[in-house]
Length: 332
Image (tube, rainbow, N blue to C red; front, side, top):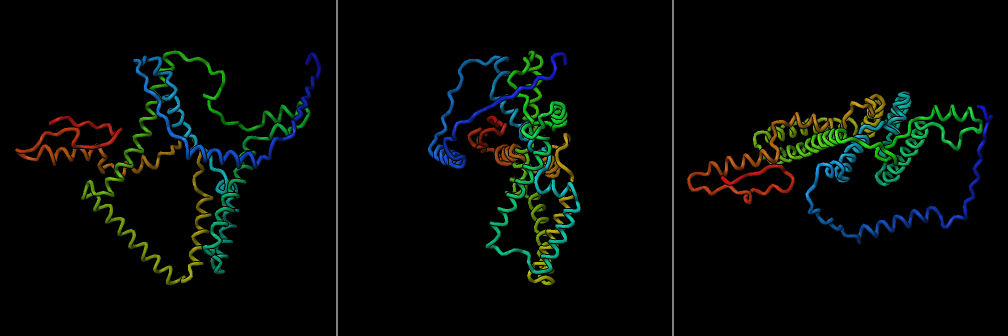
């Protein structure tokens, strides 16, 4: 430039550490456990004032709820890391691990003894975490501490560094939004919140209805199908136990198949992926199963309206739904 090359050197001196870092973490864990066991949840006093449109749009609870939904969606669609990504990067690794699993299985080394399982699970968790940390460092690019002092190299390194994920709400100087933008954001957020919560609630209600014979023919059909599948699996496992009495060969084969399948499954992290997609599919399959509101209407139709001449009036006190069901039954 006009003023030549300007180099800025910053020298920082740290005092002696107050305590060990491990001691700090242990104390934090202890204090958190004590606080969790002794704290009482204090309910906030309700606001008696009449809310305005602007106050609702600026309500931090609503904005935080919508943001939490976005956080869950981002977590569900985040790219896979750890051992799965390590296998998918080079499928030959999965094939090699599958060959090792088959060799251990046919060598009667699988499954491992029960007493060593906790250590193996711990090693699996540690290995997965270390691989995820290395992959995160590669995604984020070279760290600033490792960048060369050369100005050109530093600029190139910084330009080639990967994106650093943040939330737009974390920015200290977010631009102010107009009333129209706030209304659009509020409507969009509430629509997303309604869709996601409805999917989860409907799935749980339909699953409970099937398991508790709320719709007896449907429950009988589904549970009979489940029983047939269980019988077939028992028959297959009986054949496997007859061919492979120790189960070592079957265990090795199962591990090998899982490794190969994991290396070729669809990579997660695309924008069109929806973490609630399996629940959407389940709701479509169980579309004929009644939700809790459907059970209420069934109760009213079969126990109240068709009770005959001496039937009592239907009241909301006779049907206990619990909070948040969204169903109201008036007096008949």
